[in-house]
Figure 1 (spheres, rainbow, N blue to C red):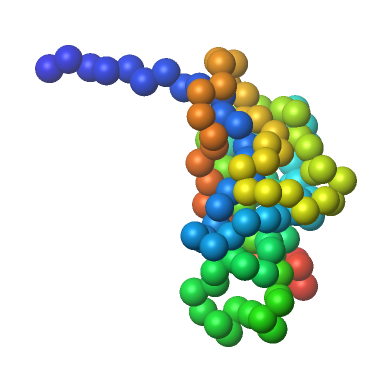
Figure 2 (tube, one colour):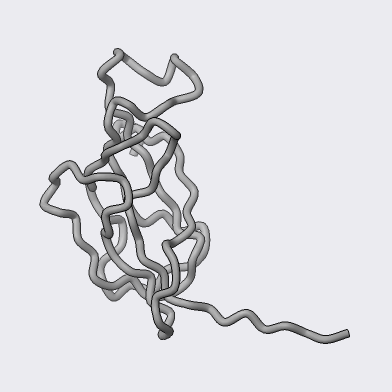
Length: 122
């Protein structure tokens, strides 16, 4: 049996599309500083999402124009670089907010997991 090695590559951190209707978000804050090492499943950023974000449970919305907060975990390992919060501006899905650098060239966007987040629960 032949083994296959898959090279790890650096990933662009972008504002992810969290539902088919989702168009914009703003960085509330990064939970790690630029230069920090991150591991899989580590929370890295909190986003405030546009009200067009499709949320499965209507009880998670306080009003039709509610802008849900989402906690994103990185599914990549490496060093956070070039973090950019865009000074809190609303940015389109796909806008780069940083890089998870593992020492290789950038090949694709990062993979992530997202969870509803309530700032009052901290």
